[in-house]
Image (tube, rainbow, N blue to C red; front, top):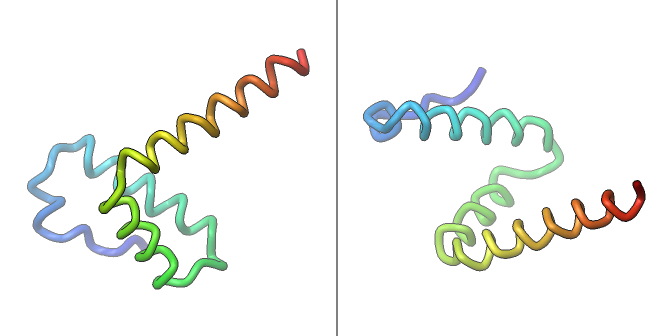
Length: 71
């Protein structure tokens, strides 16, 4: 069962709620992570979203480039 999203999320747009649920579902696939590790990652993202987003985009591009080269 997913944790309650709380009043803040309930007032949010349906898109934010869907993204939150998707994220929580993905976290279930990583049971080896502790709550503290997940919180540390969320805190880091809250402090430096630009750096994290750039890194995600770089990794995505590297993945796509790798698979294009294999075709």
